[in-house]
Length: 112
Image (cartoon, rainbow, N blue to C red; front, side, top):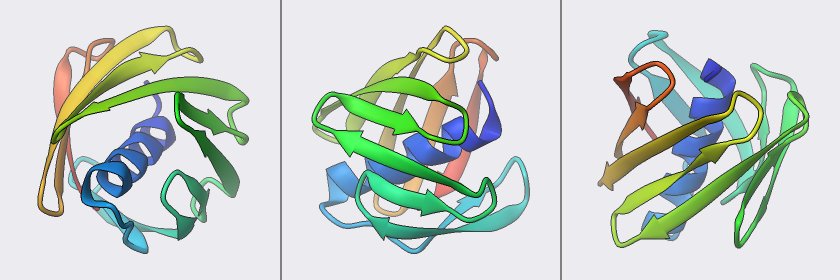
């Protein structure tokens, strides 16, 4: 899964679980902050230069032209990246988001 996809998922999952969204997402893997404007699942990723549209069933990343299924249950989330064809799952604890990318076979950590 691409970094901009994981970043969009982390931002949207945190917004849905916490009921609010922050203006940045910090990727520990990339070692940098990305400014995300907008609210909840409807956001603009300034690094990717792309809009992310949200619905109750998922996201659409306009920059990549791909759909992302996103399901939230309590403080956990899971879904499927239709662009790369891989599942993901994760948890939100406060501002920390841990996402497991099944395609990469490893965890990615974000602050959102």
